[in-house]
Length: 313
Ligand code: CP
Image: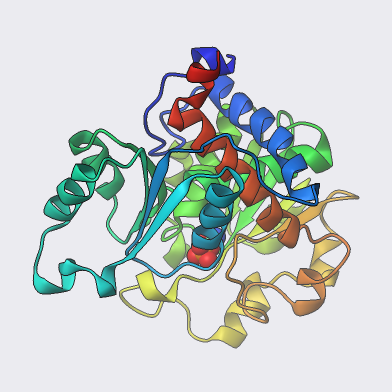
C-alpha cells in the first residue's frame, strides 16, 4: 500500500487494519521523526485543518503527544475536557459530538472510558475519528508506537517473540498490541496472575504463561503493563509487595530474556510494582523512546486520515 491508496476516514482499532496499512503508518512515522530534529519543529502539512481533542479520561502521554503532533503539522487544535463542558450539565455525548461537528472539524481524537465510543462517534460525524483509548478495548496509536520502537531496535517484527506481562484483562494496550504483533508475524506470549487473565485468552492467537520466568525466557521484547487499579472492580492480588515478588521485572529476571532484549512500558509506570526502577532506567529500557516515537506515529495517523496525501497527489 502507498499513501495514494489509503482511504480510511477513522482509526478505531488495530483489529480493522491490514498489515500493509500498519506498514504504511510505520514508514510514514519514521519519516516524520526527522521533524523533531529540526531547529524549527514545524511543517505546513495540515495547515487549515482543525483537530478536536476530546479526552474523557486522564492522559499525560497520549494527549500531549497528539497536541504536539498537531502543532508540528500546523493544524488548528481545540482541546476539550469533559469536566469543563456541557456534559456536566447533562448533555449527551452524541449531542456534544453533533454540536462539535457543526463547527466543521476535520479530525476528532477521543479517549473515553467506555469501549465502542469512538466507533459510535465515527458513525455519526463526518470528521475522521481517532481512538486515543476506549475502556479496555483498544489503544491503536500506542500499539503503533510500540511497533515502531521494536522495528527500530530489531529491524523487523516478524519472527520476534514479545512477552507482555501484567494485567492482561484490563489492558487496551495489550489488545491492540496482540492484534498488531500477530498480524505482523511476531509471537506474543502473555503472562500475569490468573485473576488478570481473560477467559479463553489463547483464542487471541497468543501463548499463555503463568510465571514471569516462563514468559520472558528467550524473548526479544519484554513489555510490562501497568496494574489498572481504576478498572478493577475488586482487588485481584493480595498486596503490591506480593505482586512485585511474582510479576515484577528485576535485573536478575531480565537475564532470562534473549541477549539484547529491550524493555518496554506504555506508562504511566508503577515503579516497584510491575518494574524495578533500575530496569526502567537501565540500558535495556526503551521507554522514553516509545514516548518520542508516539509524536511521529500520531503525526503519521493525522496526516493519513486528514486526506492531505490525496490533495497533495
Ligand atoms: N500510554 C498512555 O496511554 O499513557 P497516558 O494515559 O498518559 O496517555
